[in-house]
Amino acid sequence: MLITAEVYGRNSFSESKIPEVNYRNGIYEITIDAPTPYGRGIQHGKALKTQINQGILAFKNWITSNTSITDVDTFVKQFLDQKGYAGYTKDHTPDLYEELKGISDGANVSFEMLFAYQAFDELFVYFALNGFIELQGHCTTVGIVGTADAPNFVTHNNDIPPYFKGLNTLLRIKDPNSDLIILQGTFAGVIAQNGVNNKGIAVGINTLGNVTSNSNGLPVAFNVRKILEQSSVKDALAFLETVQCAQPMNYMIGDQHQVVSVEVYGKGKYSIIPLTSNYIVHTNHTQSDETPLAFEMNEESGGGSFANTLGRLTKANNWLHDNAKTINEKSLMELKSSDQINVFPGTSSGRTLQSMVVVISKTETPYVYYTADSPSISKYTKFEF
Image (tube, rainbow, N blue to C red; front, side, top):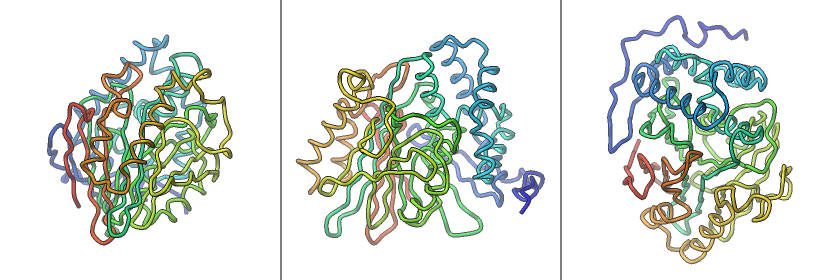
């Protein structure tokens, strides 16, 4: 079928349903439920126009302050032309491409700049590999399969550059054509970062810093959103088999029955890291012998400087070894707030700006907690369907 603007509603959306913005403990919350992807983007862009423009300005200022780039607009165009990420996204997830168009139009920001603003995992690794900045990475995910009737958990400390500070957002995404609802943790103007849906699928992410990036593919944000449109871990893995990832990543994916730690590194190529007992931790280096290495990650060759990825992994595994059988959401929040796991105050390359704890009941509807900043200075707020 020929994909046109009309198919995705770019020319038919009524502006009468711009969502109300709720502000809960430092988190912007909006519901996007327009009948078309473009319309949902318009809702997002118009409702958070001020915040999105604030983020884009901070993004551009961060680039000029932390790299040798002075003409950010020209650089972004060259980066996108070289990588082809936007074209790949349009070809493989045209609905999300149109939604991003809607955000761009609704917030009145450059589509190219907004796309680069989405693709910060890809952009950040590009900066590092081309000598603009020191290679860094911070995120820590934990997955737990609850014993007996205890819930499963998926957690994510989102440790990223500070230009996202103050822009924490909860998108409540309702598909008008189904009963699917997504609680999408992200930042104003970013289509996805982590979250959970009402089917019980949850996901958190980590950059694989010592795995070679791809010259094309689907950026992380779009992969996350598509994972959260699935009904099971099995379906999520089936989706990942259909696309090439732009930046090799770890996706911690859980449902009511299982939690898997998946390293995705090529077109349909991934490795599943086995659980230790009933838990799994991932930081910012590959844990698989199958994933192709750009370089070894150890204290001498990068493990020490790469945001302490080895130390974070060891600390979380030791803690879980002692506590995993009796884990609950409160104790998990304490782990996610602890030194090393929680990166605070951090550096210009990143710190913990959002912490997520998803609780996936074996029999009831899941729910999620988010912080509006580092969990050492920001309390967890509960969001439910």
